Image 1 (cartoon, protein in one colour):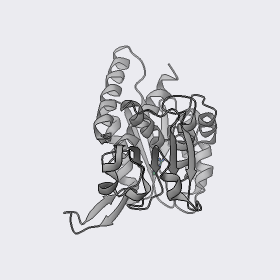
Image 2 (cartoon, rainbow, N blue to C red):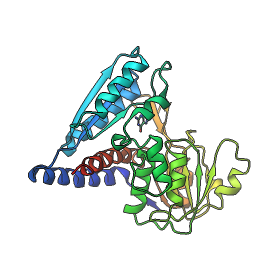
Image 3 (tube, rainbow, N blue to C red):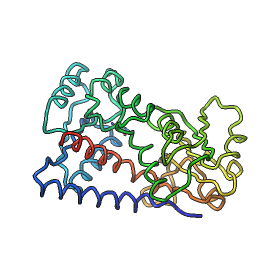
Length: 291
Ligand code: GUN
């Protein structure tokens, strides 16, 4: 069994991007600039955005964080997005989700110029991904693709079962694994909460992507010997075994599933660290696109 080290690969990518940014600066090319909009004071969102800004500094990007009160109107927020769309110094930007209930998230997603949509959430980017055209890929599926690639994991002709059909993970992951490319060329089964025979399907899988958001859902009896298991879950639950009083759980019951796997991602330290690097790579690409 090989433990896929997302932390190590994310560090490698960080160093590669930092090198390219330094070369760009030396050649007088533009320094990539990522902006983030954060609305309100949600603790998890603060942490995520803080980590994104920190990574920007580490690779030599410019970054800017625009904070707004949770009572900002939808119209005002759309105005701020338009300013970023029109600001030539900003290569890419994200609007951290979730947004307060009075703001229509889909309207916000569609207000972002697709050329600056480094989250890959705009329907134009989703459509381009579906058609195998160059686009910004959403962070989590892109991170998983990079892990499969860096570990040279064979995907062609493999049966992959994706558990979960969210817009930001399950659906795009299924599309990417089915594309005619590497990693890709999988036979993909998309499963979800209405799937009746899930265990029957996962037992046939050469690869399982667990992205349903239920702690320790995937158990050893659901996994074929030698399978590749990718765990996208992060559920924070109270625990008396840690100093903080909390522990992170994936969607996979790691201790019993790992011995059956050819490759498996741990939680934490698997898919998680890769997601910010996807955003960083998309921002670098957005900047290159303007060279
Ligand atoms: N909230 C949780 N994940 C994400 C993400 O990848 N992008 C944005 N904008 N918000 C999020």
